[in-house]
Image (cartoon, rainbow, N blue to C red; front, side, top):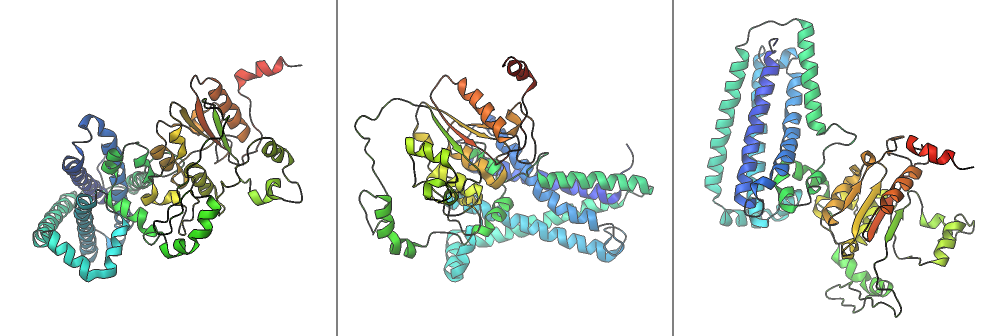
Length: 456
C-alpha cells in the first residue's frame, strides 16, 4: 500500500475516533432507555442507520480540514498558526458534540424525546429555565464531567496529530492528488448519506416503523438541526377560538365545545349502505387544481369527463388543501388535516411525524401506496411508513418500467403496473396511486409486446 499523506492520515484517524465515541454513546443510550423495549437482535438496523447519521456529522467536520488544511498559512503541520487553528477548531467541535450528547441524554430522560430545537423555547424565560435545570440536575458534576471529557478528547486529538506528523515520507503530486480526491469523495458520500437520488434524511429513521428503533437511530445534532427552522411553528389558539363557531358549523361538528375546541364528528352510516369490504383505490393527480376544474364551476368546462364521474358517483368536496404543493396535498389526503405549516410543508417537520390516518381503520385490508419515483422528497416516506401500519410502498425501483426522468416512470406505466399488482391481491385492499404529471412517452415491456401484436 502506498504511503498516506500526513493530513489524510490525521483526518482518517480523527474520523475513526469520533465515530467510535459516538457509537459507544449510542450503545449507552440503548442500554439506558431502549433495551427493555427493543431486544438487541432487533436493534442492529437502528445502530446501522445511526452510524450513517454519525458519519454525516463527522464527514461534515472533516471536510473543511481536508480542503483548507493544506493551504500554506493554514497548513495543519508546517504552519504554527495553522496547527493551533485546527486544534482549537477541533476542540470547539468536540465541546459542542459533548454538550449536544449530554443535553440529548437529559432531554430523552426527562421527556422521552430526542433533542430537538424546541428546547430553544426555554430561553424565552431564562431565569425560570435555569432554576429548573439547577434544581433538577447535578449541574456542577455534569460540568466537571464535560470538562474532563473535553480534556480527554483534546489529548487524543493532539496524540493523533503527533502520530501523523511523524510520517516524513514525501509523496509526488499525482499520489497526493489521488489521496485527496479519494478522501474528498468519501467525505461527500458520508455527508449525502447514501448512493442514490436523495440524501439521507431524519425521516429515514421512522422508515424503520418502530419508535424505539427510530429514537435509537437519531443523532442529536441531526435532530436539532432538522427541527431548527420549525421551532416557532405551532397553533395560534386565540385565532382558533375566534374562528371556531364558523369552522365547527362548516365541518358539521357533532357537539361543538368552544372551551375544549373539539372538532369531533360522529357519522352514522345511512340505511342500505353495504357493510362489506369493498376495494378502495385513491388516485392523486399531480397538478390537478380544484379551481381550474369543472367541479367548482369553471365556465370553460375544463374537465368534463372527470366532472361526469363526480356526478355519477360520490364527490368529496370537503377534502382539500389550502395551498399549492404536492407534499401539502399528500398530507391532507392521508391525514384529513389541511397542511397550514408556515415555514415548510408539515411533512418536513420532525415534530409532526406521528399522525392519525383513516387508512388504519380499514382492518383486514392490504395497504398499498404506488409512486412513480422516490418517496424521499419532502420526507413523505416518513409520513407514510410511520403512520400506515403494514404499508407496502412501491417506488421507482419496484417496477419493470424504466425511469424516464427525475420523477421516475411515466404516469401511464405507473397506472398499468399498479393495476397489475392490484389484480393479484387476494385480500381486500386500500391503495393510493400518486401520479407525478409525468406524461412523456411511455414504454411497453418487451414481454408484453407479443400480446399487443396479437390485437388486430
